[in-house]
Image 1 (cartoon, one colour):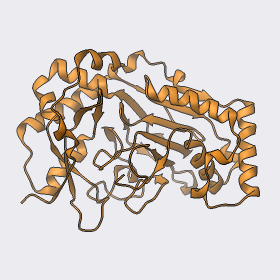
Image 2: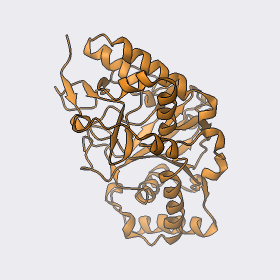
Image 3: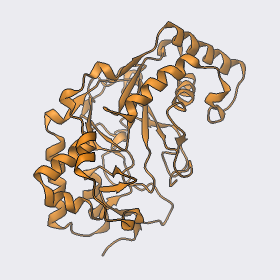
Image 4: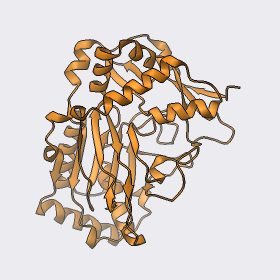
Amino acid sequence: MLAPLYVDRSFEATAQRLPVEVGRARAWHGEAVVPRDCVVALDAAALAELRALVAAMAAHPLPMLLRRVEHFELPRLRDALGRAKALLNGPPGVAVIDALPMDELDEETARAVFWVVGQLVGRPVAQKWDGSMLYDVRDTGKAYGYGVRGSYTSVELVFHTDNAFACCPPDYVGLMCFNPAKSGGMSRFCSLYAVHERMRDRHPQALERLYRPMLWDRQAEHAPGAPKVLRAPMFRVSEGRLRTRANVSLVRKGYQVAGEEMDAALADALAAVEQESREPGLWFELPIARGHLQYLNNVDTAHFRSEFVDHDDPARKRHLVRTWHRERGRPSYDG
């Protein structure tokens, strides 16, 4: 029997499809991206400004969530994050700030710096139903399944956008790296416009199915008693741009949670998306290292994480901290 549904009705207002010329104009391929061009280095003046920020926070204690970027004079960092934002809003939709002086910062201070600097990308919003604004990405040892996000495991995460199952997904994602993995955990990025164009050229019937609703597992991030699955399409067009919810794993899990058999057309369409997004020419890799701040466009760009092996020493285990940014709606989880 079908489980109760949360329905995203935004797709019902229009049957519009993305114009071919718009899609191809915005579809970059990873083989054409030079990864080092995604890196915004912090010069000596910017690092001095960071140290002054740390000193100012120590001199004027406040809970981290009350810190606002406008409380500080940060011209060099504004310039660096402005260059990063330009990378986010155009090809390739990814930027890395290199790097915070992590060996000079305790964990609480590093989080506060990340919180303040990230506001130059956009307004931070909640990442869990309980209102958590910063989210720790590390392997908890739990098996990936219902109610356990892939970010709490070491498994491979297929190309996806963050919070694809939500009422109001974020526009940008930020990651601060305390420690990378011992091996693996490599990030890959691809243009969702490029995936869309590959689907249009090679799998037109499958693409049509992806414009129609499907079920998404909400990962138990909702109010008690609320619907466990979302009904929404993968692709829709709004105000002339593509809006994508990308995560084939959560669609498959959505049907399992709902107790409903997936239609054959959707099963074939999901397989085609996986096939196309995995083609090496479509994506590029960019490692994340200690102290890096990695930001990505969560509307136009999908990301992938390879399976990883962690360090035995608990102090060296892979540990990232994540923020989500969105100007639309309320800052609460459902927006």
